[in-house]
Amino acid sequence: MRLKKTCSAALVYAVYAVSSASADTVADLAACADEHVKTAMLPIEQLADAEASCTRVLEGKTNDEDRQKAAFFRGLMRFLQVTQAGMALDANADGSMQEYKLPTQEDVAGALADVQTAIDLQGPLKGEALALRVTINQTIGQPDAVADDIEAAMRDAPADATPFVQRALEAERRGDLAAALADLDQALENDAQFGPALIARSLLLRRVGHLAKALEDLTAAIALGPPFRRLALIQKSEIESRTGDLRASFDDMLSAARETGDMSAEDAYAMNIDLLIRAGDLALDSLKDPAAAEGLYNEAAKLSPDDWRWQLGLGRSAEARGQKKKAIEIYNRILEGTQSVPNLLERNDAAWRLKRLTQPVLQRRAGEFAPGFEFGIMPENPSPDGLKRLAFIIGSGNYSELSSLPNARRDAAIIASRLADMGFDAIEIAEDIDSKNMTNLPAYIGERAGDADIVVVFYAGHGVETGGVNYLVPVDAAIGNEKDLQTTALALQDLTAAASKARQGALVIIDACRDDPFVEAKAVASSRGLARITVDPVPERMPMGLAVSPTPAMNSVVLHSTQPGKTAADGNGLDSPFVIALLQTLSRPGLTMDEVVRETAARVSDLTGGMQIPTAYGDASAIQILPGGAQE
Image 1 (cartoon, rainbow, N blue to C red):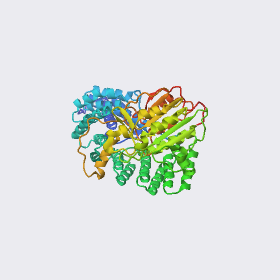
Image 2: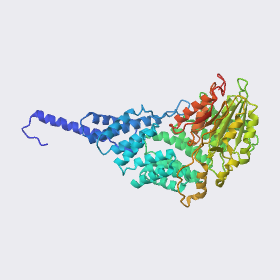
Image 3: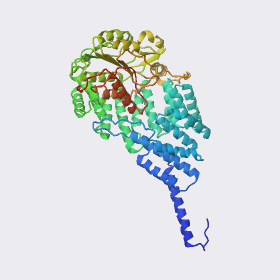
Image 4: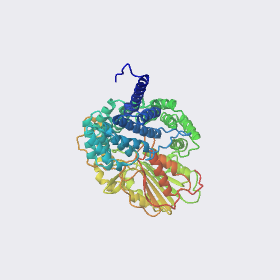
């Protein structure tokens, strides 16, 4: 607009004011629509500032396209603030982490309202807004609300890769792997460098045993840099560990621990503590290099002096180096510092290791039950009410052909140690049970259970479903003979029936709901060194987890670590969400078996962001694990 020299001062002032407001709106819109938010985890303060800029744009006068942009980005900023606030968990005074809470519908109401505004306006961001609403609903556990939005986003922006990835995730959730892979392939055809599609396809390919192709996708994701590099390095490290490429596994985990460009300094700091400890665990347990592990644990100590995980790592490193006195000192220090939290995982791990170092340990009989004292675990508090409590603890991790489970025996020992401290009269432990001893378990447990009032059975190891029947897998199971499981493995219902012979009640705990272990074992066997790429077709559906368990006898409960047909997390490093939750609830005095189940399920759901929810069968609402007022 050109101004005539004869215009009044008032008109000049008005034009200046409008121009200044316009400049402010442009600046606010630039700050609001920060594209960096799509490739990096920005600090919450920066997200809040961007949200405020979006709000000023929406409160002013602007065209529909800019208004759509402001509404979309404000919804995105609000959603990210909710999720990042939930992830930014502070450590408790004892060094344990606070529980993660899944966002609720109420938490994301503001974000959803903004996204709806963006969808209703005409402009180029409608497809992205639809995809964002899908992401929000998937995050808060509302998958039934996403199908229409995914299809609408595909129609609005057919070249966009995002809705194809989202539809693939929904297909995989249903177990339709062929449809999931087809959508991921299409997403990468639309955009060959779309990081979320590369990560998602690598995870799917890993699950069905196409390990070499999974590594190809992860290598491509690593090359993209932040924010995909860190996650891809972690996933690549896990595959390399399974295939025996231990040095590469360690190097990739350590590289992930050195990442800093994918999130704020504070968030990277917290993530790197965890990864340094995981790298230390790999150095100690896989490379058998306790000196390197000790260095990494000490590096983590500088970042987080009050974290009990690196202290436990230093104790384990001292053990591996034959420094028994030093290890005992470290474990005692952990126990002294965690007196107020008897169920803390690191405390129980340290207690078990201390007992093993300081109490006589007899020769173990591999694959057979042995008294707990042969493992350094001895009941210290007799049952407070005179009832006879008996526990059978099984940890199978060293499978000859299937993937090893490094947490299984450790988890079993920790649960055994805690039950001994609680007041169980006798603890019997078996490690790495083979097919011969596995099939003898029902008779062995049934005979002893009949002479007990309350029986607890804990199993950590591989499980698989065949023909609708759940089986616990022996450590000598052969890759090519999964159809022989009926004769070599143990049907879970037979184990439950044996435990149910207890006079008052039984609790059978199964931490075995993972992907079919035979699929990955075949892939590892055929791709050692990854000399060739697997060419077998991806199965249409993937056998997942265990099936529904038959209802056990009265006053008995079977507790699975996750839902039927779902997988359970082994946890990062030495952390098992299911075992952490059990330690937090199992020993509370006065809880019935049903209450133990409910509280454990709630805690696991919190720890895994709703991704894993334990499921139980049976009813034992009148049977207490320990009477009220019993000593913890």
